[in-house]
Amino acid sequence: MNDTFAVILAAGKGTRMKSKLYKVLHPVCGKPMVQHVIDSLSHLKLQETIVVVGHGAEEVKERVSTEGISYVLQEEQLGTGHAVKMAKERLQDRLGDTLILCGDTPLITTETLQSFIHFHQKEKADVTVLTTQLEDPTGYGRIVRNAAGEVNRIVEQKDANEEEKQIKEINTGVYLFSNEQLMDSLNKIQNNNSQGEYYLTDCIQILFEKGKKVLAYLTNDPDETMGVNDRVALAEAEQIMKKRINQKHMRAGVTIIDPQSTYIGTEVEIGSDTILHPGTIIMGKTQIGQECVIGPHTELRDAEVGDQSVIQHSVVMESYVGKATSVGPFAYIRPGSEIGDGCKVGDFVEVKNSKIGNGSKIPHLSYVGDAEIGQAVNMGCGSITVNYDGQKKHLTQVGDGSFVGCNVNLIAPVEIGAGSYIAAGSTITDSTPSQSFAIARERQVTKENYAERIKGKKK
Ligand code: UD1
Ligand code: CA
Image 1 (cartoon, helix red, strand yellow):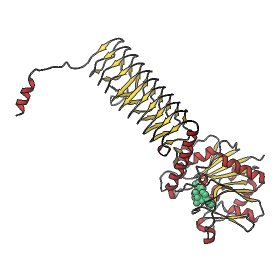
Image 2 (spheres, rainbow, N blue to C red; image 1 turned 90 degrees about the vertical axis):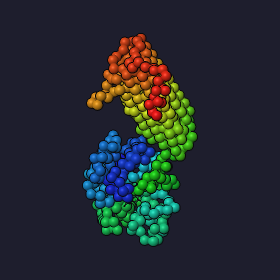
Image 3 (cartoon, protein in one colour; image 1 turned 180 degrees about the vertical axis):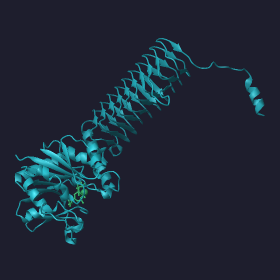
Image 4 (cartoon, rainbow, N blue to C red; image 1 turned 90 degrees about the horizontal axis):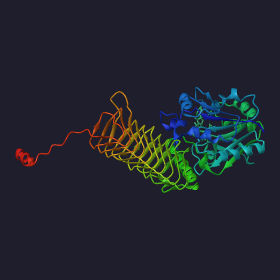
């Protein structure tokens, strides 16, 4: 079998996005559009994938995986044909076929590409265009066929006459060319069209007129080949991708109460019998175990959650939550936190860069930052770590089985020995040995019948 190469066109300015962000970096379900396209190729065992980048080149290279990808620069965006020419040096003199895709078609699937390539190879075509039928083809290039039904050429919306505009079969922007014919036809394209660009689509007519085998492969899922040119299309792509991802999880045993309001990133893993409540956003490389309850209104990014844990109305970022642990409502777990099994992190609790041992409880209104809390510790309501002196962050350690009373300030660096008690309202500046009791607060003064005097003064 011939070798197959791929070229992804991603240098366009993306003017219609009206954005500072490079078009193909706009995310769909948390992942840059062009990364979706790259990932759709990963199972195709291609010889080489070349991404054509433009003025945002450095940003693309930074934000998109580089594994198995090489980049070529198109300094000036003179059209899709000109863009492919940038990869010429890499492709000429190499036998085989080249798959060309656009970086702004994030919904394309591996399955469709596989059947497309299979069709092209079986038919021994010189070029095959992936096409689809659209009720409203506005904006796309139209497939012009002759009386015999053969594909003659592609005409862009802006260059089409009234009759051509009626054609509903459109160019999806995915092609498979024999390298030899691609190189030859690219040398012949010109920019005498309404946009003054070098159109890749003109290669079709050139090859047809040369008597080459020009075919179209029609897909019946127009969603897949949608090109995202503006924010309206971006939102549509998000909806379609979201639906696909949600359905995949539901088929694998995850209950999603309201798929409309549930957003899951492409790389997220969720165990069976986990329930996702409305308003839940799960992104990055998050992994959730089995039989968890997540949401409502919860956001997880790059989090790992053990089986049977419950996270409600909370935010968890780059952190680990163990098994059978309850988080929230209204907790904020910030990066670098590791919360053990059977813990409770309750309402209005913020945890940052801290380890919480198994079975420990921080039930309400606490801030735990840069701390190592042992196992079976109780952090009373309102207890906080005072971790920052204005310059540096310091460590707080609380030994296993300790009981920290309500409204305690632990001024770091400080270490509370295992099995200790800290009296409510204490401000602890010195470390305590294990099994101790520490109290650090003013003694109370009670003056009997004093209220009358205060009232008297007020008059
Ligand atoms: C293109 C096709 C059109 C097709 C549509 C499918 C041409 C002339 N037209 O139109 O027939 O229906 O895609 O979505 O090819 N790009 C570059 N360098 C450039 C210009 C574009 O890399 O100089 C890249 C863009 O980043 C984009 C892709 O090529 O990923 C397509 O360009 P775009 O301007 O979006 O073309 P369309 O007008 O959508
Ligand atoms: Ca486009």
